[in-house]
Length: 194
Image 1 (cartoon, helix red, strand yellow):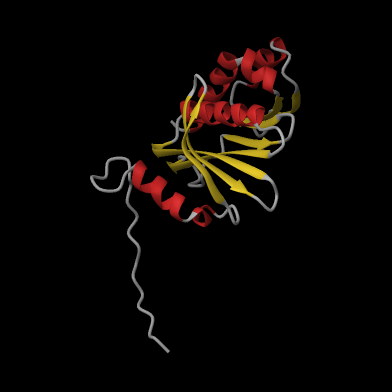
Image 2 (image 1 turned 120 degrees about the horizontal axis):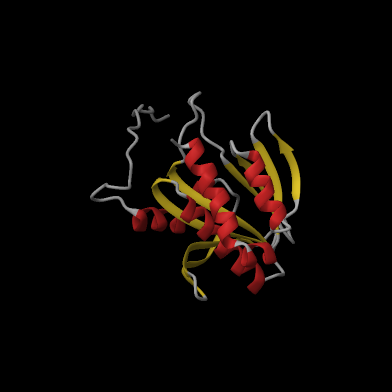
């Protein structure tokens, strides 16, 4: 039996690395999508052109479950623009190919840490067939609630003690209320990543 050699890994940040960049990471995922831990996936497309919206980094496909993953890669600390972009690409692909289940995925080097040293989950998305369920941690719950109600966006629950609001976003909500949603995501991001 071969003797194993222990090598301690050294974490590196890719954002400003001279050799390893986003293209390198995209190629590594393209060559072996299993490194994402999402199952046995195949690469459907790389830098897929989105009508009037830029390019989706990766489109992955799970043929066993007829599910597609719209993947955006961000080096460095995650920001609200990548969250919005990922939702836009997810929504566009969902409209173009409604026969598949779709899942938006953001890969980021740094999602920030809470004051307790845990990863910040300031926004959590759960994709369903006809809507996107959003859970956001935000201090000014009343302003957020008022903004959502003003735009007729369905609020699922509101927990002032934990600072979490859950709401559902439909295709129409994304199309018609982009600025309101972006403002909520920006606020949640800034509050929990300062």
